Length: 452
Ligand code: UDP
Image (cartoon, rainbow, N blue to C red; front, side):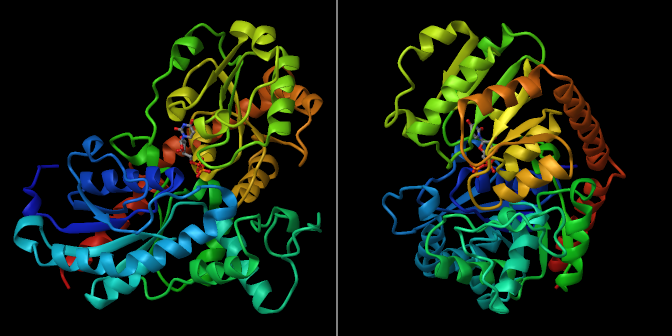
């Protein structure tokens, strides 16, 4: 496409939530939309800001959030969403007003696209008579589960009792069981239920975008279309649709790719729990001995925040020697796409799930909180790409799972399924595929705002 001067393009304001798993997909979305002729402003909190140098085509707009530091742990996540929505509403309004009035310089703002957890952005957009669009960084099945939970809650059903999760299937949500519902331990149940009601509502927004694809989530997308009365666009997997790779908060400074180069094809288990979930010391020890007992090569990410506080068991490094590589951060997409990686031990965050599927890598699933339980269930019981682990991490269970997925026939079959799904997704994002068609429709939808 011919490069237009920024001031002549229509401008989109994208409002980002400050967690890695939300930042990566919204930056991918921004890259996709920029390549389709829009100017991009990324509004972000001052907590965990993105690196503007990695995206020279975008304008970055810091919103003062009044948060100096935040312990980003699962039990603190609901509070984080509340605090950001409370603190950022007024500063964002000010910022938005400013860029709206700089039309000559920046182009006309036609729409605000906001992460579903940044709902204050919708109120601000309304004040300036701008349309707003919700961006769901997680999958459709998780939203469907959240909506069902909100309905059950409104009917007064006590499905939320954390101590007695049931194995029964949830009516209308096959293959999810009650124990797969994303209740978790993200803070006070009362606040969680209130947040649930907010994130399930489309408010006055004009459309919803998903980082998913019809070939993965046809059933939940169809159900949700019935539930919501506004247009839906499934534009994922965005990291594959985007012309440019997103940046990570922590750069990949280690030599894990060099280490992977020395390993045989499909021989390595890659272990990572994303950017928030952590193992306690006991689980870390069981994991370490499980990997050691499996006798398979492993690449294990233990983030700095964990390694500062917890020690791997004595004698572990000596025992595994060159067979193991432990790092504090890895460029995950690069790792998963490496031919030596045969399987992924994952917490089943949605980005990790999509990234692994897109590389044809089967998974051992150990979900922790939020949508991860839903994703794990889909991986193991819908797509057949994952092994489900029990709730308690035990070394013998880890050893067995690693061998099943890397050495035994079961793993070979799962890898074949993963590769077949990868190929289907490749078709979806090509010209004429469902994700590509959805993107074309979305761009047309956005362009209709500039005629208003
Ligand atoms: N990630 C990475 N290196 C790591 C761990 C995570 O690049 O060592 C990236 C990963 O590729 C993914 C994101 O961080 O894009 C994590 O998102 P996800 O939804 O999987 O999990 P979350 O961190 O939100 O729990």
